[in-house]
Structure formats: C-alpha cells, structure tokens
Image 1 (cartoon, one colour):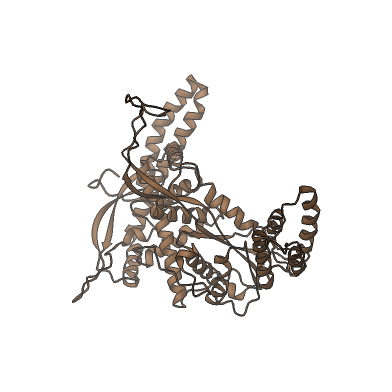
Image 2 (cartoon, one colour; image 1 turned 45 degrees about the vertical axis):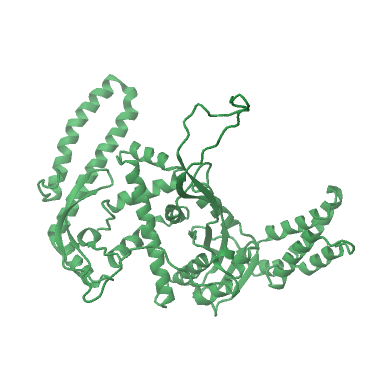
Length: 524
C-alpha cells in the first residue's frame, strides 16, 4: 500500500484498525460541516461512500494477504502452473502494482511464470507468461476483477468513452481515460479469446455441452447492423480555393479562418453480424426470466455462422425439442443454415426455417409499388395479398402477382419481388399457419431489437468511428451486458485466463456456405 518497498500487510485486523482510525477523524469533520450547512449533505454523502470504498479496498487487501499467508493459494498456483495449456517455468517473485475496485493501488508480491523455452527449434509464437498468484484471484493486467468488471461494464453502458470516464471519476474511481480504454479493450479481447478457444474445441469435438437448452424450444435469429470503421491516418490533401483574374477569392469559403488538420482518415461503413439464441414458449414468445445469448462479429458471415454453431452446441441444443431459425431474406444467412445444423450436431433435432413475416409482407408492398398503381388501387390489393400470405397461401400470392406482370414490357422490379417470394416459399419458410400451430416464432423482432440495443445505441452514432479491433472488442463486451450475461461472462473469463494461454483472439473461419462459388468478398 505504501509503495513497492512498503511494509507487507499481515492481517485483516490491521486493515480494519487502519480504516476505523481514519474514518473516526473524518466523521468529526463531516459532522461539523453538516451542522454549519445542512445543504452540503449530498456532497458529504458522496464523500462518505468514497471513504468506505477505500475502506473496502483496505479490507480486500487484508483478505488477499491473509489468504496468501495461509498457503493454499500457493498450492493452487503450483497446480495451475503444471496444468496450464502452455508449459511454464517455475515462478520467480516480483512486485506488481494492482488497482482495486475502490481505486486504491496496492503492490502485490506474486509469482510470475515465464513460458518454457523451446530447444533446437525457433518458436515464433508470442512468449506470454502468467502472474500465477494473481490469476488465482482472477486479476486482469494490473486491475482486480471487480475493477475490470466495473470499468468495462460502464464503458459498454455509457454512450461514449468520455462519458464513461466522467461517471467513473464521479464514483471515486480515479483513472485516466487511456487506462479506462485499455481495461475495457483488454476485457473484450479476453472474451474474444475465450470465444476463439471454444470454437477450436468445437472443431476438435471437445466442446462440452451445458444442457441449458435441453428439452426446450429454441429460437435462433441472425441479422446485420451498420457502423463506421476508421481507416489509416493519411495526409490531408489541400484544396485550392478559386480566385478571379485579380487573385481575389471567389465564392463562399466557410471555415477559412480556422486551422485545418494536416492529417485525416477515411471511414467506411461495415456490417457487423449479430446473432441471438433464446428459449420460446408454445406461442413463440421468449420465456420470461430466461436470458438470451447474444454474440456478434465483424469477421463476416462465415464467422457468425460458426459462432452460432458453437453456442448451440455449448448450450446443449442437440437435446432441444426444436430449433427454429428466423431471419430476413439475406442469402448470406440462409446459405449457411445447413452447415450450422451439421456443425452444432442438430441432425436428430426438428429444425425449422422461418422468413420474418414483416419482411415477406414488405416485399408484397414493393411489388405493388413497382406497378405504379394509385393508393386507392394498391391498398385493397395489398391487404388481400397480405392476408393470403399470412394464411400460408404463398403460391397464390405469387400467381396473383404474375398475372399483374405485363406481357408487352416485363417489369424487372416486380419480377425480382416475385422471385424473392417464390424462392423462400419453395424453401418452406412461408408456412406461417403451420408455424403458428407448432408454436414457432414468425417474426425476427428479437434480433432487430438486439441490433438496436447492442450496435446502434453504442457503436453507431454521429461522428463515431472505430478501429476494427476496438469495435470487435466493444461489440463483445456490449453483447454480454445487454442480455444480462455479464456476471457469468466474467466468471468464465477468469477461469479461462487461469487455465489457457491466449495470445490472440482472431481466427480464420471455416467455409460455412453451401454455395461453392460463394467467397468472403461476396458474402460481406
């Protein structure tokens, strides 16, 4: 507590006495201030909570010291070293500064185990060791698990990094904004590395199923959002302002008095892919008091398809009553459903494919709009065709639209909408009456809501541009916060860091499309 060469903490009682002696002095000052000005209660109340947060950190430090002194942690650390996924050398002591949830910095004497060196051949992999004592407590890089969880969660909930930093400062967590970003992105990178590890286990058929979806009706929904990715910094090209024959500026030149930046970057729209898995009842509605699983990625359609298969297998969908895939008409989704079923081990589970009813009806509206009919002519026909589609009579809808197709001059827009409905009807995705009888969801409202809450409200805002690796990290953190899976995710992350080496989170997804000619460039 008093520096890297300070006195070691001996017991809990030492910390409790240290806190009580300080709080007794502060209480006298707060009492006198409140007597003089009762209106200061709000500021005093916040100072009291900050003081007790520091007291909590003192007690946590004492608890850690007592636990290490007891000896079982060192035994567990040695077992971790022997069972770690990468061979580690025996530990050497070093003093590491770590920050606790209340903001207090303590110096912990921990065992650091470097990876064993390879003999007779060069090892090109990054050499990452493990602070084996701190890993028993779930520490991240220089931060306690509570502080890491608090900072990353606040970053995911607040609309901007600056806003999250202000809120943390207001709560007494004194971190600079760079540290806040580092903690959040490291947390997200850890969750992404855990996801990569699970996908590797799925490919090797070693991923264990939890049984969470056993005996349940399961809905899987997939869609894509929009966000801007920042490109590389480059020199900004100068714009020559027009002048007349006398050399005077002509026209408006807004901002001429302001200094222009010398460097800039390009920003391109990207489509992050998002998926959600949840349990639904016999009416197709999400079961109350159950939590959805949400995940997303910027790595393309093959990656999100493999992520869906991983989560289905991990949650035990192979023992579900049924699995229903609901989405809009994007070909990149439906081309990968068969491979998802195969990879997730759902061959013995009844599976259904449902085209979102609202999207299907919208294409009827677009088909009629392409005919140039007036509103009075179009509305009755639209309502009639919509009722037919909802009643499962998709073939009749296609036939009626074909009759509206002119023979002298083909309507390309109308033909496109007819082809859309015919393709999904032939695939069995428009049997809405049968779907309702089976109690299956007919709409993709869950994933549409997920796109808005996970992506649009945090990653897609005016003048918000992301580096691709930071966007992937924030997308993962946000995907755990929104469906209230945060505590479980933090627990899984601590266990993962304690047992597995994780140098990187990126991976090369398998080809999940049934179309041989489908390429990643076209899929995105």
